[in-house]
Image (cartoon, helix red, strand yellow):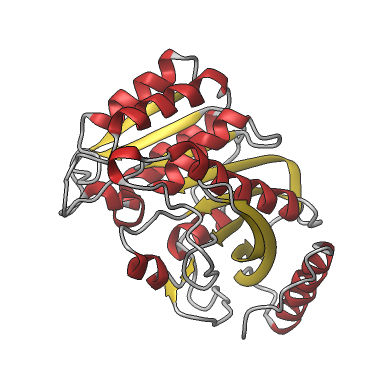
Length: 322
């Protein structure tokens, strides 16, 4: 099935109507047994880059939900990372994180995974370009990604199957630092935040464990901590070649010292580069994340059973990336 057509930019409610039509069509053709559906929508978002240029374009979003879960359900948004070059950003295709998205959907979340502006099937200008390595302009690029995420949350909460006052944000790498930026905004209806390998400016090939303008990153994490009161779980593997084992602890401490709320969880080495903790080692982080969510707004969450054969329904689309 091809992605849905873009809604008119001044009529975002039409995107909701199109999404509900697609969901209804899928439901009409699937058996009564619970399935995890995978829908695709396009949402107009307005973004501003580090040089002050503003524009509006459609952002592709993948939505996962289990058909038989009670409604309305809590929203969980998953934010992808940032490749070190333009070719890698284009190769992202459509961000999905399908294994973990379906795991969260089977626990009762509606899971939204945006492919942000400048990446993969969404395309467009690189709004997250922060400039040269020695003079990185970090605050505006994380603000841009946070703005896109807040627009998505507002849109998703118009759906009758999504709770407006109860949700989770999860981010990987660049997306991990973005969800900490969002914690500083204390977004309404977000009960807990999961940061996996969050940071920026890293390049494991050219400068392993030494991201660009590291002092600026630490200052920004401290700035976020001054207002962040939504609890954040920081998850990092010891052999993360983007940041190393030392910097993430210093970033967390800077955040925490200014009043930021959260916990730091270190994991043993994962493969050759622990930066892939989220996708490569779910058996390590899922019990910890589940306990954190239970402690922060979701006391009744239970580990979902393994999906039975034939209980995953998905809509084919453009090339995807995990």
